Image (cartoon, rainbow, N blue to C red; front, side, top):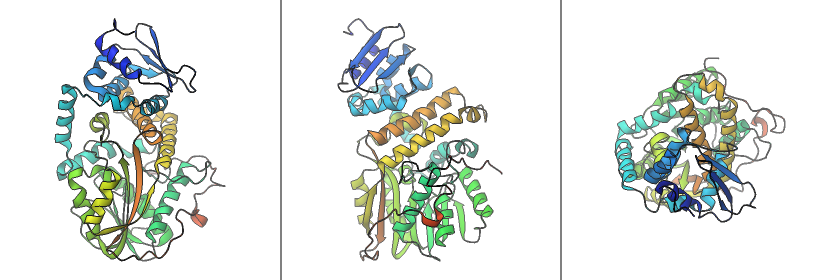
Length: 431
């Protein structure tokens, strides 16, 4: 069927031939139409390939090349349903087949990238984090909510706003940690300070947050000062390996993905060292069931140095650090929904983002849209998971007999009527 086509095009269509249960229609640059899978399947996907260079890019660099071709505008899904296209690839094992025989060019490119970003080096850790999180607070404010939270929310009702989902996530963590007034909390990878602010306002804790992002730290400190919490919580720009001190409770949300395999043991040992005897900690991290820990496209453009753990690695490392796992929960569908909300905000504010700087050009905007869509697809149908692991510093159980976590926010639920208020964006910088 494809024997008269160029080799790159034959290769790509060979992968698409794996599709059995979904429906994919491909229109190539010459206007030829190819159909794959079951044409009667619901939610048909229509891939329009505009530039023939797409085929050789994919043949040489696999998923990295496919992502780069999208950034260049060489292909699109007819209805802008990139998440639907990628979910189809996950369900029909197209990605798995594409990874079986990586080209020498891709291997060389990936190894060079990883050697330059390995996060066991403190300098690389700072560079990797700043690559992503120092894009600018003015950028992030257009797709996050008023809590400035850039991690998985927790949805209890379909009508929950993004803000409500994030507050419910903070409440869930506070309940699991059993926070009490006057306790000290360390937040490793504190972002814009949302977790500490929530815990200080609603549970009366004192705390320290650390980040390597200069932009995040500045805004977190500003938010803390505006809320009159400067005497109770502080933010430091430092690496977790450089921080000292003892705390009643430990939390880390969405940071462990940046640690790197070579530093798993170091991280867990530091978590233990931060905690007082019998102290309680919670680790919230994306994980994977795939042997591919950070795809080559994400490694190059989104999260350099990233390395997703597997669940058994997390529990093994915690145990070896003498930290007893007390509870584990997978929030996989919650992150898919969070990403969907972020994408909606991103598209709604696309013009405002583009106007901020020449940095946010069309290629950047397509890159970021692909990132959000690919993550949503991976949480919906792919190998990505997101775990919250509760642990104790020692071997003595001191959590009582909890019956449930994640009860409603009660008096400090998001400011909405039955969780249906309009979506709130972060307050503009400097307001």
